[in-house]
Image (tube, rainbow, N blue to C red; front, side):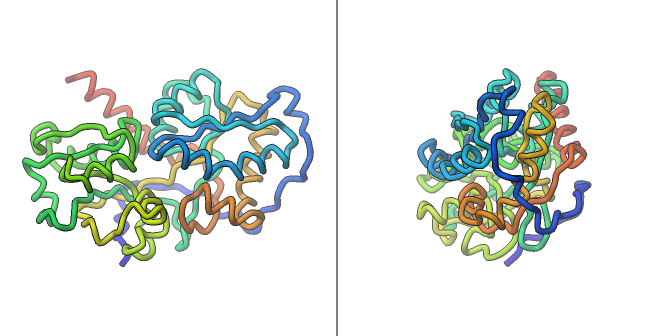
Length: 313
């Protein structure tokens, strides 16, 4: 079954690049300026699994460009935002909200390079709310007076979009739910719901493909593949409007040649190194499409509105 994609957010996408070619291997002139490539790994999953998944990618970047490459696993989403703001990270695959917060915090010192493209050609995903299948809860209304686990305050699907859309629907999350709390990530929130510590959680899914497998991509698919979740254990009771896929992004103050090389490298990665591509994308995305800043303006607007609401409280 495929989740419906409601066309409410305007999502301007660049054309898909066909059969992109890997940049010619070899050390680059930009390496004299950068010395090393520092890749951030965003939170939401335990650190050991993140390091394993990105090990092949790190080694490939290092060998292809002849530049020492290191990965840094942030404890939470905020760590990536802070790392970019402090110019301690050069590259990261991130959600739309961390991108928006970095863009706001650094006066635009971030450039989106590519976004994942799904099997049906779309470059968007959904936030979903889930409950235990044996909870007796079958709809959002059934969550009135129940507890909800947010994933992370810097998560697009695990906080910003659900909170924003519920508020838009007239639901005050402070009073509608008996309690809400941050679980520390998508994986941690799912564990908390399965262990009956919360009645529901929110996470992300591509909405494409087989629901019984956690769809093609997303936190649900990752948990299924790890053996931590059987989709028969949960029920999806709410779905958001489409959200633009998060980008792989680089600091804009880095050499233009580095950003151009990394964009070309990422666009060619799925065909040239499909195993590494599958590892870092956690599912069966079809490839990458080039990205532009305009894709994330709706999320930046949400982030601004959320910050204004927080100041008003």
